[in-house]
Image (tube, rainbow over the protein chains, first blue to last red):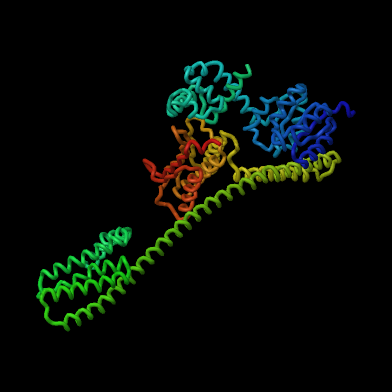
Length: 221
Length: 359
C-alpha cells in the first residue's frame, strides 16, 4: 500500500513509552502510519495542523490541558477528523462524556494492544467503537432516555420537581437548591425521592447524571 | 471512719478557704491575727487568774505562720506573750518568776510551732506549683500527641495518594507501553510464521493482567476521584464491591445528590465508611450494612448501620480503628459517635459541617 493511501494517525499521549510503542504497533500495520505525535494540548493543536491526519488517538490525561478539551478543539477545527480516546480511566465512567465531546471510540489502556488497531479501523470505517459492556450501557441509557425523558416521565414531574431536576443538572448542591426555593433540605430530598421514582432512577449518582445530561441537552437545543 | 471524715471535711472546707485566704492581701491577714490575739487577751483577762485561755493563741499564730511566714508569726508570738504577761499582772498576779518562766517556755514551744507550720505551708505551696506544672506539661504533651497523630494520618493519606498516582500515571503507563511493544513482537512473529508467536501473545496477556492489578492497587490507595460527585460515586462502587466480595448486602443510600468539593473531606469520609463497614463485617459479623450519606440543614451526615453483633465484640484492634475514625472526623471539623443501632447491631454517625464540604 502506498504511503499516501495509508490512514494517517496522530498520537497524543503524555507518556513517551506509550507514544513510541503505539507508533511502532501502528506503523507495523499495512494500512496505517503515524503522521505525528504530541504530549500536550498546545503541541497537539500545532502538530495537527501540519500533519493533517485522518484520525487522532487522544489520552484523557495530558501534561497540560485535558484530553476532553482537546477533543472539542480538534472537532471544532477539523470536523472530518475522527478521534479515538485511549485512556487509563474506566470506560463506564468516561466513555459517554468523550462521545458527547465528539470522539468516536474509547479504548482502555489495559486492553489497548489488541483493540487499538481494530478501533482505528472501525472508526475510520465510520462506526463507533466501544467495548461490549459500554455499548450496551449506552444503548440502555439511550433507550431509557427515550422512554424516560421524552415519552412520559418528564411530563409527570410537577413544576417544582422539574425545577429541582434542572438545578441538580446545573450542579447545585442540595442546600443551595433548598435556599433558592426557600424550602428545607428535607423537602428537596423528598422532591429527589419523587423524581427518582417517576423517572425510574435507582441512585442519587444516576439522578445527578441524568439531570446533567438533560441540562446539557436543553442547553444544546 | 473519723480520720476519713476529717480529711473529707478538710478537703471540702479548709482547702478552698486556704486558697481564698492566699488571694487576700497580707496586711488583711495580719490585721485579722492581731485582732484575734487582742480579743483572746481581753477575754482571758476577763476570765480572771483561775482560768487560762492562753492555748487559744495557737489559732491566730497558726494562721500567721501558715499565710505570713515564720518571722511575722514569731513577732505575733512575742506580742501575745507580752500581752498575756501584762494581763497576769494587771489581774493581780503578785509573783514575778513563775509567769516569766511560763512565758519563756511558751516562747520556745511557739518558736518550734511557727517554724514547723511555716515550713509545711511552703512545702504545700511548692507541691501545688509542681502539680500545676506537671498538669500543664501533660496537657501540652497530650495536645502534641494528638497533633502528631493527625499529622501521621495526613502523611499516610498523602503518601497513599502519591503512591496511588505514581502507580496509575507511572507504572500503568509503562506497562501499557510494554504491552504494546509485546504486541508488535507478537504480530511480527506471527507474520514470520514463528511458533513463538503464542508465547509472545501470552506475554501481552500477562502484562495486561499486570495493568489491571496495578490499577486495582491504585484504586485502593486513592479511591475517591477529585470531582464533586466523587464521594457519592466511590461509596456506591464500594458498596457494590463489598456486597460482591463478602457475599453480604451492603447498600449505599443517598436520597439526593451530595456534592463534596473539598477532597480531604471526601477522602476522610470515604475512609470512615470503609473502616466502619469492615468493622461491621469483621467484628460484628453483620450480613446487612447500610451506608447513608445525606445533607441536613447545616451539615453532612454519614451513617453506617449494621445488623451485626454490636459493640460487645469490640476488640483492641477495633478500638484503634474507632479512634482513627474519630480523628478523621475531627480533622475535617466534624463529630463522630458510635453506639448501638435502634433495633440491633451498631450505628456510626459522622457529622461534618457544611463549610468542610466546599473549598
